[in-house]
Amino acid sequence: MVFLGLAFKSLISRRGSVVLTCLAMTVSIFVILGVEHIRTQAKESFYNTVSGADLIVGARTGSANLLLYSVFRIGSATNNVSWESYSDITADDRVKWAIPISLGDSHKGYRVMGTTLSYFEHYSYGKKRNLKFANGKPFHDLFDVVLGSQVAKNLGYGIGDQITLAHGIGKTSFSMHDDKPFRISGILAPTGTPVDQTLHVSLQGIEAIHLDWQPGSRKSGPEVNSLVQEDLAIKSVTAFILGLKSRMTTFEVQREINEFSQEPLLAILPGVALAELWEMINILEGVLQLISYLILFSALLGLAAMLLASMREREQEIKLFRAIGASPGFLFVLIQLEALIICGFSILIGSACLLLCLGATKEKLSANFGLYVEANIFSTNSVLLLSLVVIATVAVASIPSLGAYKQARSVT
Figure 1: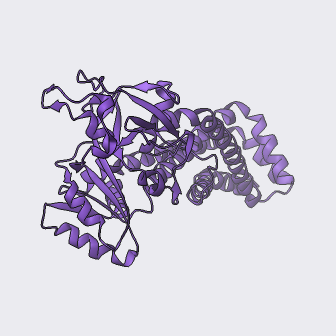
Figure 2: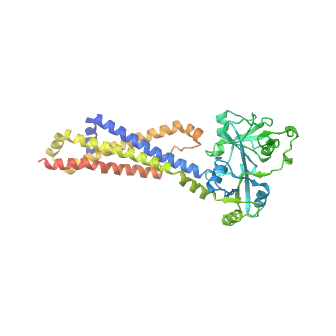
Figure 3: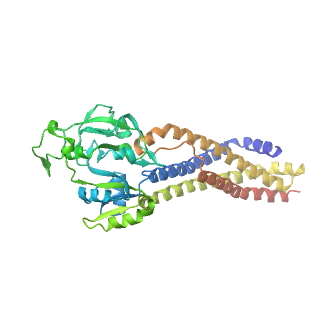
């Protein structure tokens, strides 16, 4: 307690420089914790985009490209998979469930995905969390559409509203399927995945809006009222997701699909493909970490400079301590304690500021980036980082502490 009291009084006597040093340390703690937390949450969200799926199958292309367009709705497929091939593969006794995916249309910049009701039953994300409806129900009629949470929120749609789909995936399209509007039957609960940015319709609905379509223009086609869902034959899908009865057969089924004789196909393991894709983009993660470490390093140098600059002002203080019997080791510990107090306050203030900022920006991060950030910033990695900050503070403070120690020994 004597040490703490003396250290506090010493810092208060130099409060101007101490406040500036504490502010620099606070900013560095805020940045390094913020980068680590966002990095961890982004990586976790990335890996949890799809779970419970054993294989993703599409036309033969790169594994990253297949993953991007089938899961993240980024890019386009090189080719489609015929419905006959899809039916043959999914009829295998080793297949438990299948989710077909048909892409190619959009609505105001958001991708439209054709699928079946098995999508709402078997698609999962995170730790095998199933999709849930915030309002409404799955599509049942030919021109029903289910919206992801962010589509409904950003465009202000509700149950029963009518929307028009556009041909192609551009944000601006002059080729509209305005003769066949869709009615919103359901809105999904937020997931923090590309599902939130997607409109979901039936495969028959996709076929219906393209019955009167030919490259470059629309041709005469059947009236909407004359279309019957059961009469619309599915010709192809963009990709499909498979769940197997036993994971022991995953590599066997994957090999057979990759060697499929009817058409060139590619089957990928979602977990492996996600890891490979993350490795391709994690250079940004390393750059952010490097920047945060450099900021911390500069703050620690500022702390050392402040303590060193104060040594000349403390010559009389050191002589007084020596006169009352304080040892050089006492002064060494006192300087270290002052540095640790500054570090401790910086950690508390920086952590509090980060929590407030995350609370204030949580909705915006979710809406704009699909990133759901948890409030708990003290993960194993962040605690380790803070421990390293404390160790680095002790190491940097050793420079002025040794100076005080030597100065005290020279005083008789």
